[in-house]
Length: 181
Image 1 (tube, one colour):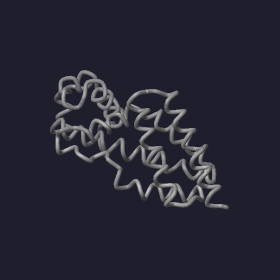
Image 2 (tube, one colour):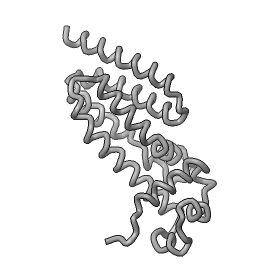
Image 3 (cartoon, one colour):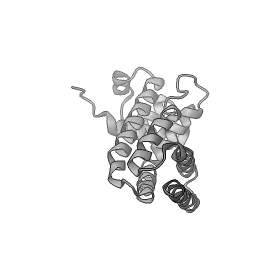
């Protein structure tokens, strides 16, 4: 059993990375903001890269679990499901911003770490099934929706995100009517 409770520590580290940027953050600032001695930090992690990978692993696993565990509650209701996604992204906005930093970092060790684009079609198909909509028609809307979610996380523009979400809900609704009729 790990003698360190790493989750609160990783959350603090993510805050520092989001605030200062991955490349500019050093071990000293992680220790200071994580309220941990450098000796203890080096007992747990060998390098900043190892910390970054641990943070990325935590975020991707945690966020995916949260989203997957909730979507089935919104079968056949694209608006309620979309709002669940939005509220989840809003709740974990800093974690998603951290992932965006990883995805855009010049360090090749982080490239694609939090990038779920290869899984996007799989996710889209699962959600289309839950919503009982045509998978092929839904995928492009889902990709637009996820882009809007990333936009919100990076800008904090809640009103712009609301306008974009509801426009997409209307498009999905029209697609549903078109495929039903």
